[in-house]
Image 1: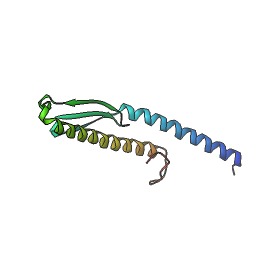
Image 2: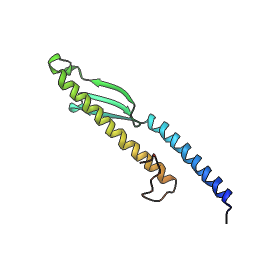
Image 3: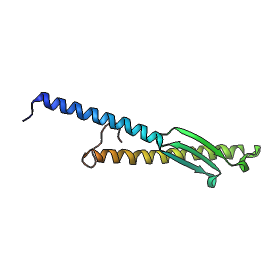
Image 4: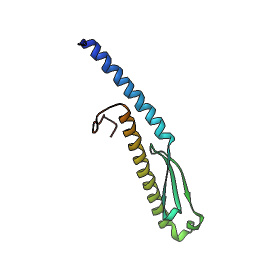
Length: 113
C-alpha cells in the first residue's frame, strides 16, 4: 500500500498535469476559428472558439442610413451565432481532452463544463 506521502505526491502530479492540459486547451481554443452569420450571410462575425472576436464583415448592400436598425440587429445576431458556435467547439474540445484523461463518463472537473 502506498504511503500517504506517495499518494499526496501522485495527486500533486495529477493536478499539475491537468493544469498543463487546461492551459494547452485554452491556447488551442484561441487558435480555432468559427464564423457566425446573419441575414443570409450579409453579416459575418469571425471569432475564436475561446470567444475572442476577430472581425466583422457587413455586405455593402446594407450600408444605407434608413436600414441602420436592421444592420445593428444583424450584427447582434451574427455575434450571437459566432458565440454559440465557439461554445460548441469549446465544449467538444474539452470533452475530447477529458476523455483522453481516462476519466469516467459524466465526471466533471471544475472549469471543464
